[in-house]
Image (cartoon, rainbow, N blue to C red; front, side):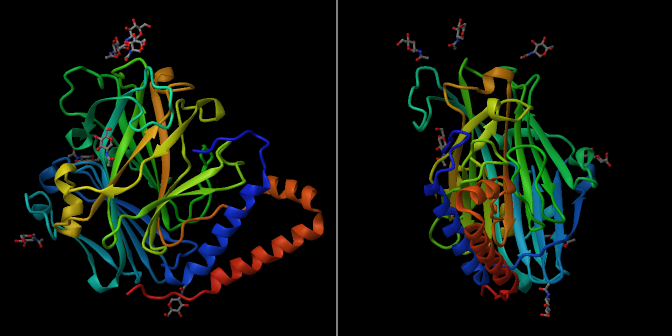
Amino acid sequence: MCVCGEHDWGWGRCAPSLVLLLSLLSAAPFGLRGEETRQVSLEVIPGQLGTSQNLLHVRAVGTNSTLHYVWSSLGPPAVVLVATNTSHSTLGVNWSLLLSPEPDGGLTVLPKDSVQFSSTLVFTRLLEFDSTNVSDGAAAPPGKTYPPYSLAEFSWNNISDSLDPATLSATFQGRPKADPTGAFTNGSIAFRVQAFSRSGRPAQPPRLLHTADTCQLEVALVGASPRGNRSLFGLEVATLGQGPDCPSVQKQHTIDDEYAPAVFQVDQLLWGSFLGFVQWRPVAFSQQQKGRESALSCQASHLHHTSEYFLPQSPIVRAFFGSQNNFCAFNLTFGASTGPGYWDQHYLSWSMLLGMGLPPVDTLSPLVLGIMAVALGAPGLMLLGGGLVLLLRHRRHSEYQSIN
Ligand SMILES: *[C@@H]1O[C@H](CO)[C@@H](O)[C@H](O)[C@H]1NC(C)=O
Ligand SMILES: *[C@@H]1O[C@H](CO)[C@@H](O)[C@H](O)[C@H]1NC(C)=O
Ligand SMILES: *[C@@H]1O[C@H](CO)[C@@H](O)[C@H](O)[C@H]1NC(C)=O
Ligand SMILES: *[C@@H]1O[C@H](CO)[C@@H](O)[C@H](O)[C@H]1NC(C)=O
Ligand SMILES: *[C@@H]1O[C@H](CO)[C@@H](O)[C@H](O)[C@H]1NC(C)=O
Ligand SMILES: *[C@@H]1O[C@H](CO)[C@@H](O)[C@H](O)[C@H]1NC(C)=O
Ligand SMILES: *[C@@H]1O[C@H](CO)[C@@H](O)[C@H](O)[C@H]1NC(C)=O
């Protein structure tokens, strides 16, 4: 976590972001090629006999590729990401297989040989810690652990009711099926999914830059009663490793905090070399009014191998990938014992971006460029600007290469 003062534009931070930009651009030919705009559609795939089995298919069609994001709250909330190299690939769902104890093959993307990349994220548990008497903000776990809520044991709303084709969004809202203490009587956890047909930036912090190749997920815990006076919450997230190793979580520093006040860092998880990614600013918010006053830090643990037997099982993951043993998991924890917290308003919100191909890279904002212009003088800036233009052109013209 790196939270710095408003006027901290130290030059030391500039280098890493330029190096990042250079390394991303030069590596682009080895990754999946993105497209600037896509025809995006959201479709709820109806289950058998009207049973409430949420399955949301986000299909993003480009000139030469289609991205599929399949979100579901069958079991723990999960998404399966599939990139194909044709604009005609389709998702096949066999509900009787999917709902059976052996769901292998219940979810397919056809034609099979068009699949260039696939992976998954599974949100397995909601964690809660008592941070009373914990002074070290970076301690892991950040205090006494309460029994986690298994998100596989939640019941979820009918996703059709929240589907909004205008904003390309839908929300999975859930509460525990069994809630003996009544903690969720007035509360719920919501996973709001949003897709985009072109690049842009939402109005709300952390204002992650999105492209047509990405989906945004906002996780919000609202109104649930905490078990302690100073409860911190967290999320356990699982994914599949590519090969023997777990994907790594990288922290990138940026000098630009215009869009996410006082957050000079972007964290990302990369699958393969620029095939897929998860990206987030290490910040969460304790109020609906998202700003500096309600900003909480967000810590990510290292990814490590986890036997699937220790994780709640996701039928869609099993249905698409079959039986797998290379699950990796990590924990995200939000906030510290001091400062704002969930306890203020019983509200916590955190956002991430999920995508295929190259992660979006924040270029310097006009404000920061202005400050640099003053500091460097116009000739230096033109030199820098010219270099960036050349690099971006190189990126546009770089040829697609198959990952096989
Ligand atoms: C979910 O909502 C849609 C539209 O409101 C409705 O057609 C469908 O039957 C509902 N499904 C269930 C299981 O209630
Ligand atoms: C799509 O593929 C065709 C044929 O391979 C190629 O000529 C064209 O440039 C590609 N278009 C894009 C946008 O990648
Ligand atoms: C679904 O899978 C079952 C079991 O493999 C099979 O018998 C059935 O024909 C499949 N249904 C469809 C529509 O393909
Ligand atoms: C916190 O520390 C105080 C004083 O050391 C102690 O009395 C109290 O029981 C502790 N509370 C918890 C929750 O550990
Ligand atoms: C839920 O809300 C009602 C009405 O605001 C309140 O009376 C009740 O105490 C709340 N229950 C919990 C567990 O917070
Ligand atoms: C929470 O705070 C209240 C009032 O400060 C105190 O009476 C209570 O014992 C605390 N509960 C816990 C679990 O620490
Ligand atoms: C996440 O934290 C919980 C509680 O501390 C722990 O039981 C679990 O093993 C952790 N998961 C991972 C993947 O580190």
